[in-house]
Length: 305
Image (tube, rainbow, N blue to C red):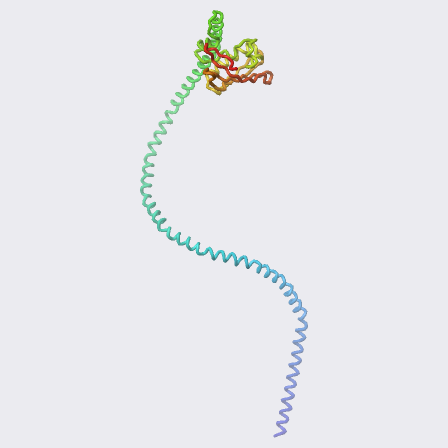
């Protein structure tokens, strides 16, 4: 019996040692497999380690954004009560808006009635337009006739204007006759009576070729014909308001100019005017004189010295 137990024990121990040897051999085999894959594992670990640093840098950058985000979040939280109040106020305003909408809806039928009435009024309007279109040729013909009449009127006005200068020449002839008769009234007063313009200072430019006033008025550069043309310009100017300008031109001498009615004034109880005499020749200004003249007790115009 003891011998059998001893044999069984030896057999069990031998089996155990054999199993242990097999296990050790398998473990050695697995270690060899792991060892063969170890370089790949180390490469993978290194790649992972290389990727960790950029990730950490990215995390650090994200950490830098966190405080501003938290601050912005805090400000937004502070605005929440105001937003809620605004929402509450908006909610309170909704009923009046709905009431206004309801009132608007009530007016829609009235608006539709008005639209319908307008539609009914359109055909008569179109009929009236059609009548107007039919009458348009006659209207245009009337306008053409009126235009023709206006053109004829303008021609009559132009003819009347052209007749003014001969009338002024006749008035100057009358002035000359008056001087020879020996009347005591001055040329300015006679001219005023003849032309119907009582306060026209006609003699302002009519001192004569050797008058000392020529230097003051700038007439020393004028010929007798220039002075006469300038007088005619002044006659037209006196019919215009203060601030007006009358231009003149003498093609024979190449002299042109303008006379400006600058202003009115009173000096020692006398009516006075300020005139500006300007003349050009050859593109150059040869006269630019401003002077005042007053009407004396004999109704004659004299320089205001």
